[in-house]
Amino acid sequence: MSARAGIVVTGTEVLSGIIRDSNGPWLSERLRELGVDAAQIVIVGDRPDDLHAALRFLAEEGVAVIVTSGGLGPTADDLTADVVGRFQGREMVLDESLFGRIAAILEPLLSRWPDLDRDAVLRSNRKQAIVPQGATILEPVGTAPGLVVPPSEAGVAGIGGPAVVVLPGPPRELQPMWRTATATDAFRAATAGAGVFEWRIMRLFGLPESEIAESLLVAERDGIQLGELEITTCLRRGEIEIATRFAPSANPVYAAFEAFVRARHGELLFSTDGSTIDAQVASLLLGTGGIARTIATAESCTGGLLAGRLTDLAGSSAYVLGGLVVYSNAAKVALAGVAPELLERVGAVSAEVAEALADGAIARLESDVGVGITGIAGPGGGTPEKPVGLVYVCVALRDGRRMTRKLSLPGSRADIRDRTTTVALHMIRRLLLDA
Image (tube, rainbow, N blue to C red):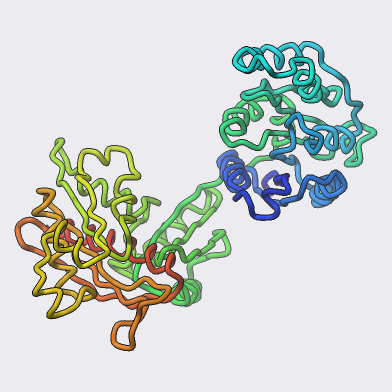
């Protein structure tokens, strides 16, 4: 069995939802890359007893290493280092050399703000140089040092308990410090039992998650030994993601499973290498030999979200010319060139207007590909004939080829808009593959 880890995210602002946690998932992914299973992510407020309880819980679960994030600042509520030190049975001591390095980091701040009380600032930050005796210090990226703290004989976890990696909360500090932490002797010793695993992702579009559950049952009935694979499925943005982890010895089993999914679901399986629809569309637009197709959008209910997704990938400036956001009929006419009589005849939410928007994006921005989107994302504004969730999408090429779809999407405004952009990307992919 692979080495297991626990993650403790600290901060009352995270626990209450004021700040969204990104450190836990990021650390889990980095641990997985090292062959270490992230068994639990625990979020606790800035309360010493709760942090101590979380450390005890994970130690009793038998994890080899615990990673904490947050609670290393100079204020009174930042107590992670002290709690971890006590948990590991280690005396807290002032590291004078570390304090000197922290003071040097603060010098530019103190020089820019001459009215600050220098002694008060240094007194506050002195706390950050009080560390568990015997811990490995990770040099500050901001002002907070990180730590790798092995257990001592007096520790709550006892000899053989987990090492604790203590990292700051800001991702810009935590992420580079993580790389330093994994190179320490204490971390390597704690994770010596890490395994070697393969990780594969398949992505499908256009079928319900229940159909994948049925496919797994059929695969087992067909004799594929799925017990050798750790398979998880996730429905996200209307796509089904099948993530599979397995030992290298199970490669033939995974190959049989992938072949089964391909044969059963055909073109609905659009990715076997983990690539996203966004990356695939970008690759198709960029083309080969430096020849790129350009693209532009004219969006109503999605408000430019598709253009945003298209520009999120490196190299987007080579193919994304821009996006028109055209909520009102007046904007559709003035910016995208939609004929007023068309709007009067069929209404803004219609296949014809989606096609006119796609053509307008091509004409106004001189692109090779145009996308038009019009619909009702809500929360109000729908009618029995045109309810909330009704969206029309058109993808058109300069040579006149086009694809138009009518969508009826459930969910909130954000769900409808997000799902619409995903459908549009799949339509772009299909039209470009057929071109």
